[in-house]
Image (cartoon, rainbow, N blue to C red; front, side, top):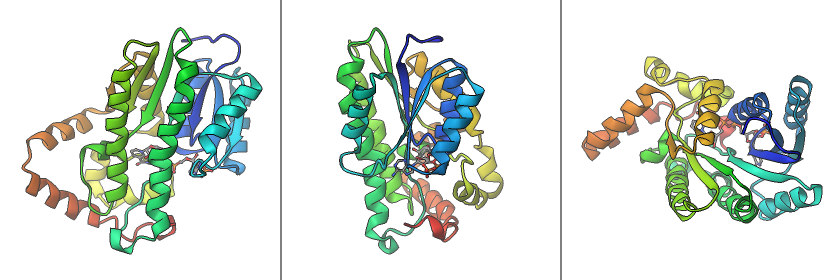
Length: 273
Ligand SMILES: NC(=O)c1ccc[n+]([C@@H]2O[C@H](COP(=O)([O-])OP(=O)(O)OC[C@H]3O[C@@H](n4cnc5c(N)ncnc54)[C@H](OP(=O)(O)O)[C@@H]3O)[C@@H](O)[C@H]2O)c1
């Protein structure tokens, strides 16, 4: 999938900034046409212009709030109307955060449920039938290393990513005899915006141990998606962490997680919305 037939596109959600923008640039480098879905703000316009000026690919911006009930169907019908054929779907949009569950506003959990799980599932559902008609197609669901842990103060986030992991593994099996490959990307903390930078800093040297740039994660993600790899965990230290997760006793593990993630509390008050 280096050069593409006319109008086949990679649809990336949360593509205006952070990891999503890095995916957009990585795909554009490979000559893949793009549909960039994000909130309708200046970030989306800026990223669209940046990619269009730098690469010889077509870029269609779609400003839409993915937490809206009809968003997945709206995106699909705009693609139909514009004659855009999605041969790669990158479900990247997702909200993280750190808060004690009992202090969290209802909207805090609701937004994470809508964006991290509902939008991702329904986008897969609306696009798979047309993707199956293509010779080859790809779904990359952006998960997190958090999917393998039950993280205190990130209870809804880590549970939402565990959902993404299990949903995607099951979907991959259902589609194994089709042309659609499903991959799951599981990065650890990434410095993508001021909130994530602040959160990662609270872990001091430990935070840096697992750090990989968003550009490198996007490159690893796209390369392995095109190879049809099932679970993509960038970085040796992160793979080591998963191994430790399997051998550590549950009680010790939960205590370690509690003490580590308690440090993030109150760091990003602005993020609590
Ligand atoms: N950062 C980390 O430490 C980390 C670690 C592991 C996994 N991940 C996962 O990686 C993915 C990307 O994370 P990130 O840190 O790059 O996120 P980010 O910096 O917060 O970027 C989020 C993107 O999603 C868009 N977005 C936010 N709310 C939206 C909505 N309601 N509808 C449509 N678009 C929306 C944003 O648009 P605007 O720019 O317009 O707001 C932005 O383009 C997420 O799934 C996250 O869970 C992140």
